[in-house]
Length: 275
Image 1 (tube, rainbow, N blue to C red):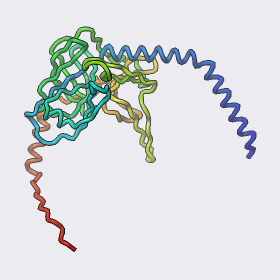
Image 2 (image 1 turned 120 degrees about the vertical axis):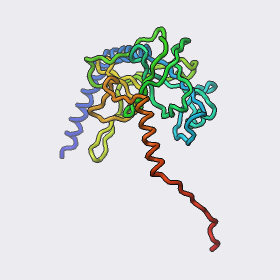
Image 3 (image 1 turned 180 degrees about the vertical axis):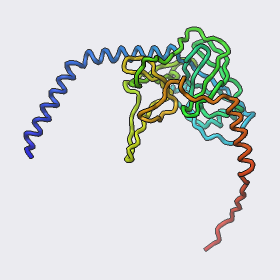
Image 4 (image 1 turned 60 degrees about the vertical axis):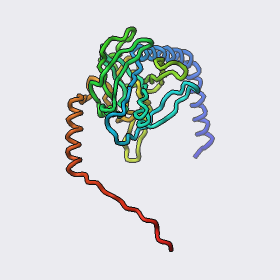
C-alpha cells in the first residue's frame, strides 16, 4: 500500500474540510446562537416550578428514589432519599411546562398519591394550586390541572409542522436564585444515541426537556431519558394517559392479588459454629 499517497490524500481532505469550516463557521455559529436563544426563550415562556408537598400519612413502605435539592448555601445540588422528604414533610421542587391553559406537564417522581398533601405551581411571585389529573406511565410524566391562572405564562403547543427532534432545552431551577427562578440550557443536539452489539439503538435525552426540530419548532417533550432511536412519541396529545380513577382501580386490583398470593417469610439467623 502506498502509505505516503494515502496519507497525503487524507491530509488534503482534512485541510479542505478545515478551510470550509473556517469559511462557513462564523455565519453558522451566529445562526446557531440565535436559534439557541430563540428556543431557550420559548421553553422559559412556558416553564414553571412545581412544588409537591408530601405528607407522612399515607403509604408507609420504604420508597427507593433519590431526589436532588438545590442548596441555598453553596448553590449546588445535594441528594437524599424521597422517604426523607416524606418523613420531614419537606416540599419537593421540580420543573414543569404549561402545555395548554390550565394544564402542566412535569416528571412523575414516583410519590404515591396518598402521600401528596398539596401541589402548587409557581411562576415568579405568582402561584396556583393544582391537582394530579393523570399519569403517563410510558413517559414517566404526570399531568396537573391548575385551579387558577398564572400570569405571564405562554403555553408551549407542539407544532403540527414540526419534524424530528434535533435540539433540546432543559429547564431547571437556577443554582443561585430563589425557589421560583428558572434557567434554560439549550442543547445543540436532541440527545445521544447508543447502540448495543445486538443492533438495538436507544436515544438518551437529558430530562425533563422540551424538544425542537431543525427550524426551532416545538415537536414535543421528554421526561424518561430513554426512548427508541426511531418511532419515539414526544407529543403529549399522543401519549396514553391513565386517569387517577384508573390508577386507584389498578392499585386496588394489584393489592388484592398480592394479599392472596404473597406470604410472609420469617428468617431465623444463628451465629456460625466455631471451627
